[in-house]
Length: 121
Image 1 (cartoon, rainbow, N blue to C red):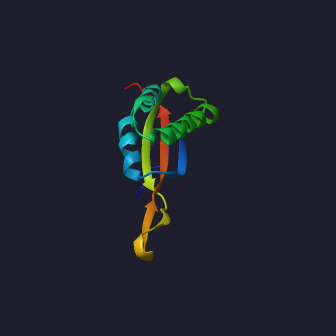
Image 2: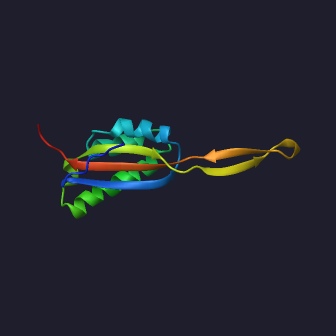
Image 3: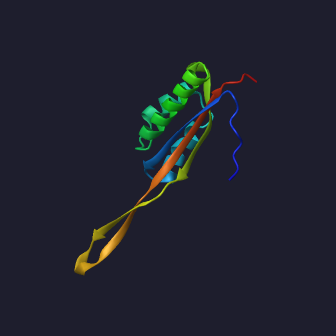
């Protein structure tokens, strides 16, 4: 996968090794991609999914990076990129009858969010 390098007015944040499946995180990221920072926070607050907690944390970190490192106003920020990639699975074993063991894979994911200044066009 090729990714373009972020421009000077783009701030990023990453959350790595977040417990939860990639598909469940992506369904939330698809809803907030392209929205303003304020709209995304409101949406995340009222969504009934467990993955909104870590996503909110990464989003706030990206906005803090934009504010402190680039001097951008949080009110003018838009979520330009939001993606989730698969992380390593934690392997656990569950005891079963007659001495057997079943494998349980606890999935993790990496969340990446980039915010950019809103362009009026």
